[in-house]
Image 1 (cartoon, rainbow, N blue to C red):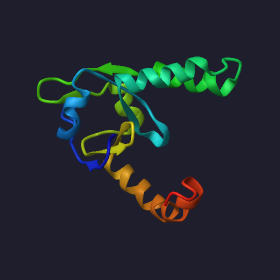
Image 2 (cartoon, rainbow, N blue to C red):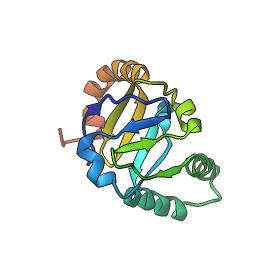
Image 3 (tube, rainbow, N blue to C red):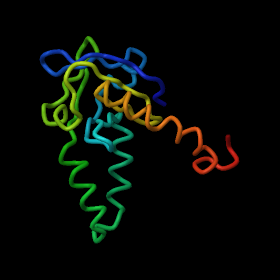
Length: 143
């Protein structure tokens, strides 16, 4: 499970240090792809394989499934962290997410998300009020 918010910086080669607490779990490899709200999703290989299976069983006759699958898989890049725990984020993905230097890496349960730091702060500020009002709708009877 991925939790917390971290603030690494991209270097001039487009490399990012993974949060230390996740390096062991991601050491064998990971997949980076486009996420919603212009962030990047980072999946451990096993989780990406689980999602691949779910999309494989979805009906290809559904236009939304085809559209989502095309963008999701076409933009995916498998990466292996280097010995220092850095991953290289492909230029096309950096451009999609607007990543320049300051980043926010957030834990999102079964994945990490990489955001431009300013975009994350803007998103978070806009969502915190809604978050406090949604717990009953999202998790009825749990919280």
